[in-house]
Length: 264
Image 1 (spheres, helix red, strand yellow):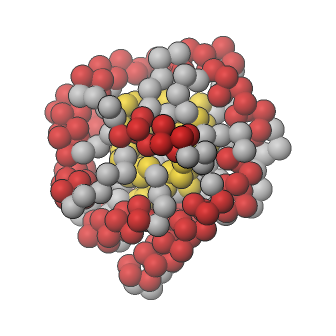
Image 2 (cartoon, rainbow, N blue to C red; image 1 turned 60 degrees about the vertical axis):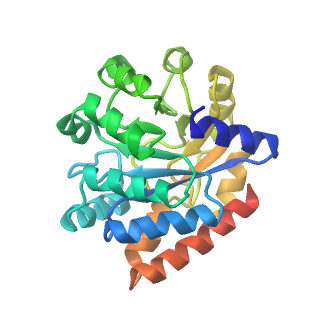
């Protein structure tokens, strides 16, 4: 059974919501990312989304764009990220890992080879931002053949009819985008979010998590009322990016994760 499935089942059995944290791999370098993942998992992270740096991250706001540029400048590659995942698994980390990427990076690697290598390293799923429902055939067969989940995306602009198509055979969990636009921490979330999450949970055969813009424990607690979990990304990436040293950034991130986990 995929680690994503067992993690969400465990959260449900314990009556709590899942905390999904996004990290920008390679910012400022992969050694720091590896230590960051170890420590945020120990601090209460249930699922780790590992952002693969890309030169044109069109779905991301300035915080993650800048982190991607720093990661690329430090020499971060997809092969290096998979090697990091393999080391984390060898050290005993059991939290699910989801690769968060744009298709160009995956295409250059080769989907068939990547799906096999990712599964062997210890990846549990992939979220490909710029591959729409109609093009899932480019990636889904290879992922399924290797026991990896393709994480589906739905947005506030997704109609109920389209959501039913996207989610009919969904596996793992569904990522519900909470706001229109790009990623980035926000001071307020839309008032219609609760209705959106209710509708997506009715349409989805798997857990529904909500992300984009969640930047505080208060927001996480509010969103979790109608979701099975929350995703926090830019608020964590920003902490690493603004820190004077990786060690200070990791310590700040650990405290932040603990505050999020406490309300879920």
